Amino acid sequence: MSFPPDQIAELQALVPGVMACREGVVSYFLLPGLQLPAGCTPSKVDALLCPTPRDGYESRLFFSQLVTSTSARNWHVTNTRIVDRQWCAFSWKTNKTGLRLAQMVVEHLCAIK
Amino acid sequence: MTTKSSLNAAPRRFALINDRIITAPKEVVPVSVLRALASIAADQVLVRDHGSPNDMVLDDRATVDLNDGNVFYTRARCDATPPAACGSPAKLAFAVDDTFELSTAAELPFEAFMALFGLEAGKQLFRDFESPNDQPVAPGSVLRFKDGPVFYTRGGQHHDARVEITIDGVKHKVAPGKTSGADLKKIGNVPLADELIQNIGGKLTPLADDATLCIAGGEEFVSHPRCGASS
Image (cartoon, each protein chain N blue to C red):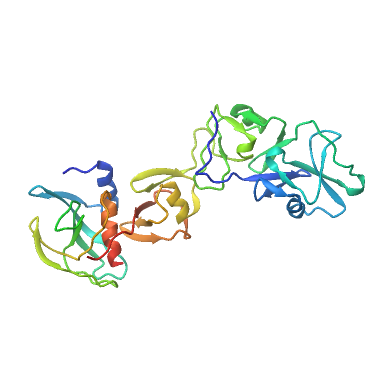
């Protein structure tokens, strides 16, 4: 699946090193050194955005390690392998379709602010 | 071609009283408010200037619509004659950069307006909506008094003082300086219920509607609908 260049540019403004990748027919965006909201430990992690529906979620944001935050989240995925890396994820539904790529990332990050 | 309002904001208006610019809170104003704003003594009456012997003496309890004429002077109450029918059009005052010029024409072509104020052709003229998104008046436009009589200028030939910001991936040109989160939402057509977040070098900083931000240019914002929930 391809995404509009303006959405990718907006994502790059958020995470300068963003890279598109693919596993099978699913597109992902690798977000290296994604800065997390204040109060999170660590403050930066690599993340992987799955912008299409997966596992019953409209989109998913995977993290390279567990993150502690002021808002406790249900980290129900702790060791899944995607594009040759291990990822963690907390359960979070954005409950809205049609979000732009950057909006998806922000919507997930706001869950741990 | 006419000039457009800026995001439906109200244009700035004023009354010219004894050659002093008195900023008016709205276009229809009680005479008592104008009297207070201009510190008019009790023994003086306020008169709307039609350039006629029958200039309209205003009752202290009346209201005036500044769209009907915004030029006034005071006269000793004892010399004031009872209001009489006045067939002459009221004088209209336009202001640019806090200087005023009078006109009896309610509409002026852009070029005539610039000449009236002695402004060089390259200057950009903005109608003052007190908005960060004031738009420059395009050459060839017709400037209508009722659309707002207050203007300001920026720069010289081909100079654009506005700066560029990005909201949800879309670039917008805005006036630099202080602006609020709510104003930024208007500029970016972001629903008021959504959260606006400033991206400062990858760090996401939520921006409240009433927060004030000094726009310098280059700022980036992302909105999101706050619709997420744990499942």
